[in-house]
Length: 172
Image (tube, rainbow, N blue to C red; front, side, top):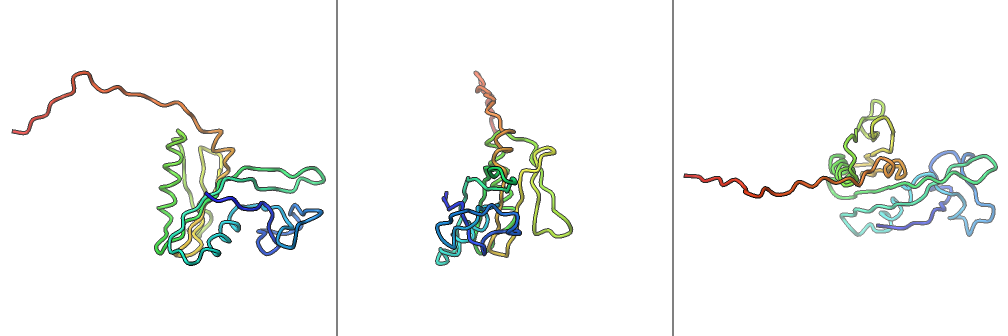
């Protein structure tokens, strides 16, 4: 698990800066805008740790969207990144399926966006909760809306007791 600053520089900000939440009194040039996505912050951590061949990180934090003259809209997101020699989509998909299983979510669906298979949309029923993106052959990232994920989570667990007289199977 990593914790990164919610403020990013203009180079790290994804999207047009006119839609960005800009700080009135930033701490420095690296902390001018509030981030819209967790991915650039995770990529910066990977870049700072180039000496490692394998990195698996995640962060649960807020992202910010401009809301006119009002306070920005804060959304809690879960972002993650896997870096290794043969990183692939199916490894990240397996991690997310296990996460959904632990949350008690049964109807998780994956579908490609557009004609490219580099980005995949993740849905729970009809709600879009995030995406998986293949950045290159060594990097795969994902980002999920944690608030929607938590809304669909259930803590109902089923208990199936062991049989009082279990069957005996003999091989003769």
